[in-house]
Image 1 (cartoon, protein in one colour):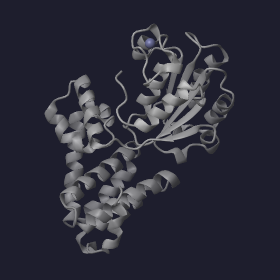
Image 2: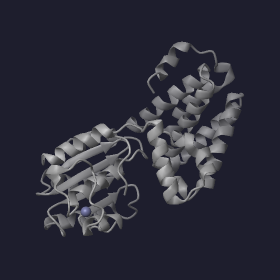
Image 3: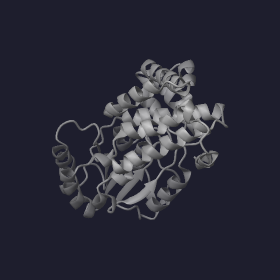
Image 4: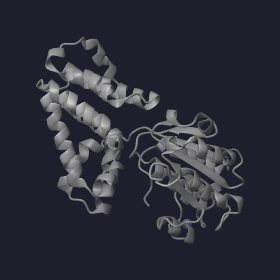
Length: 328
Ligand SMILES: [Zn+2]
């Protein structure tokens, strides 16, 4: 795996902690999906587990890429790198948690250290948290937990308080292009397809991996949403209501769809920067997304409340609220 693009400040701080042997035994990485949190966690694991690296002398987060440990990580088959994704865990989460943690009663298999990555940690329920908390408190020498989440406030508070919190921002435009290029090469994607989807990956290029195998589907969804927004902007209030209801019902894709809407409105605002209704709708859409995530409020009314500002009869709202958008 190549070096992590972006997040320079965090990478420097992590390198320093590892060099000084002061890396906390539990870290919580938060930030949007697709910005490289999990890749960074795996890079930390690679560094800590590599057989050829002297940790007091590192200048980057990487293993040698050649030793047994590095090769096992590359093959996603390292016994001391344990990863559980709580969004993908279909069976009983508590059973999966117990199975994951059982090796922690013994020494690491290959070396002195081991890393446990808990992805989508906001989905960890109380029962699994109770099992995890003991280990988070007393992980044992050489065991490191890295919790990953898009929604740190949704995490069970007792878990959140036991991990050192690190937040990660979306990548800038150059970094995004660099990551997209890398993924596109690896996934053998066509330049043309990438160009049409690029605006939607701004800041969160890792999401291309999710699109890679269903690029046609992703492109048609982008097209559908764009057409719907245009119709709403031209005054189709009935479509607005059915569209927001439909989005609210599609729980599985809610986050992705909501983010897509935000990105499409961003694009529209860039083309038409003084359009107050787009600016207001965008600001409402972002704050309602945060509200939904922090308080778990029903999505449809929030989406409706945000997008209703696009309707022509509601245009001409106070421009003051547009200043809201500065700094986004
Ligand atoms: Zn190595």
